[in-house]
Image (cartoon, rainbow, N blue to C red; front, top):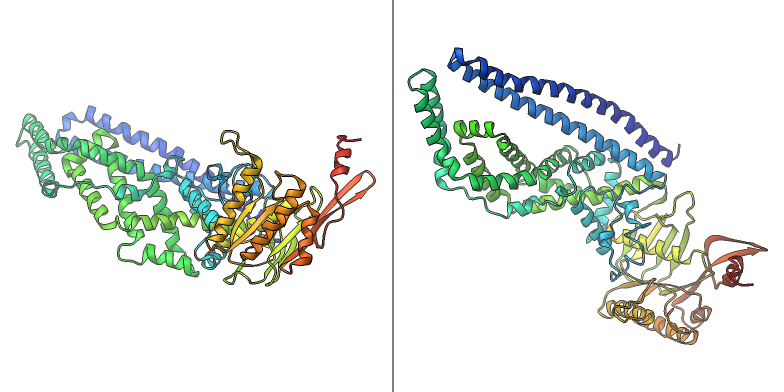
Length: 595
């Protein structure tokens, strides 16, 4: 059985198992609805019928309230488990769709499109029919943003990322759990950062530390005196009012804290669960090991910090019911205790929380790489980036992820140590632009530390720049030719400021006449070569290929077409040399645009 069949079987098997889990938690949810309702109805029933038994009724009501809170919590936990399983089902269903070529469930990353970026617009990294939904498996906006940033700007330690991604490839079931916990957040909640709240200041005055003990003592004393008929109802009511006055005075600030913690609550719960499963596994790669050390082995570690914050969020949530809020504040000075805990948490962890969050979101981008590797394991490998920009470029069986593997035609490409540019010629639709984007997208993946779609990918560690599509701008009074010159100037600026640049160009100087184009292209290519840049240029201008006869640093490659009678065909394979067959006239006639 092939790896591709294995992955399909894996996702289908997961779905069968998860469907059993979903039914189990769905049945339990119905049971908890009945239990909660009966427990809740018992409270007013005891109030109504409990007067004859005096103080005992108050004790029974307290027990019933406690039981109701426990059952509400248990019901909520079951609901969380049910949603978790539903998210896992969604993940596996989406992967089966992706295998069949349907990536509609994944973000296209349109918000990251930037026509001024060094290469992303030309390489169709974001947007409709782009690379991003094929690769992206992040589940939060911040995780998606970090993934986009890694693709656009590369990784400072791509080899460490290689090792981490490969290790996660062997933990796909685990990574699905990690994603599923992240999916518990609503869309607007996924932009919330705990670190932003932690940088604020929760004011906990010193007198609160006194009252958090004094209030319970007064409350339980007054209740005991009333229970044993040592004071009457009026005196007990006065005691309640006295105890609640300081709580009432602080209500505005407490409500604000309540709102803030309620806002970060879902993120805290999701992150807490993600850290829990991250702590359970024993990762061997240096990057994941460093993450685990930072999160779990330091004195102020993420595991303890998130557990404490999770408890704090739950404690503040108990105030949602006004009756429960009154009882908790009367007997336990609840608002003061929560405020003190929140203040202490900020003082203890505010220096660390942003680092923890960065790791949690970074894991989403690593999992995206691992999922890509798992789905395309037979077609991917890891690049070797060389420090020497003049080192040999050696690529075997490179392909583009956008093209389905059943239609994928791979190509080899080499540039020797003394070679700087490859000029690629060929007829329309023969595969030149697809090949350029195949090299560009895979160089982007290599620099980000992700798997590349190739059998071998040895490349100097150079920054990718491209000029493949340009448009005029009427509002800026920018002509097509001027816009293209600006783009080429953008590339040249990078080279002149010392960046090691690998440039991909498709039919440069399209906006001028043939003679200008011929002379200008030749001079521009010569200057690029003189400045030490390397790259690939696709062109229909066969005169440009003559540069290879004069300059050993330039080689010629081409794609071909086969025309037989009324039929035209392409094999999309690249060869050494210069194209001889062009098909523009044939295609015009085929489309009945000429006689």
